[in-house]
Image 1 (cartoon, rainbow, N blue to C red):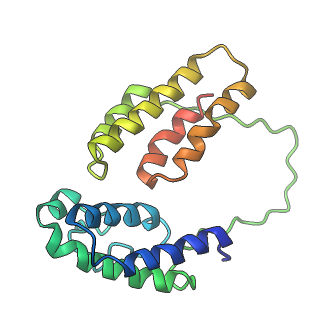
Image 2: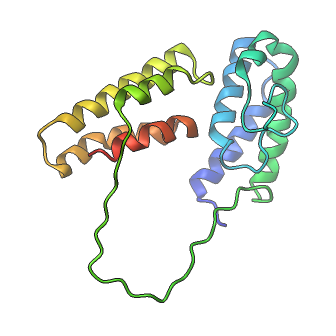
Amino acid sequence: MDMPKEFYDMVCADIKRLDNVRNLSAGELFELHRQIDARYQACINKWCDGLWCSTNDGTHIAYGHLAQNPQKYVLSNLKMMKAKLETYKYQMNAVQLPKPEVSNSQVVNVTNSVNVNVTFEQVRKEVEEMTSLTNEQTQEVLDKISEIEEVVKSKDSKKSKWEKVKPVLTWLADKSCDVGIALLPLLFKI
């Protein structure tokens, strides 16, 4: 699996960021930890293995526990994350996406439809319960949900609506998987 050059450059830059943590305050270390975790948790196999305060199922970091004693655990986690990124840049521990099956079937007269049965209120509640987000980040996501809702409810054409949500899609690309999974169904309402 080839990694886009821009993504590879980002990985290398993050490795350098993790090299230079000695002069960061506890708050800056904690924020760097959250950024790196959010950026790579869906890309690297067994990302949480070996990290302090990972949940029992190994799927994410329990930030509430980590925040109680950040000095002790955050530096150790950042060192482990750096090691994982150094291997990942060579794609040695990358999550492998399933390869699509090749089919020789011909399909005629296909209609694509997406049925989205999620409400804006359900997504708002889900976002408010995300422990991996700070209060400021939660409010930012809630503002984006309102922005999407306004576009969906508008009388504009589909094309115009998609033009209006392009900045939201760009913003969403820099967020964690949890935020993306929560907000994408709302975009399908367009």
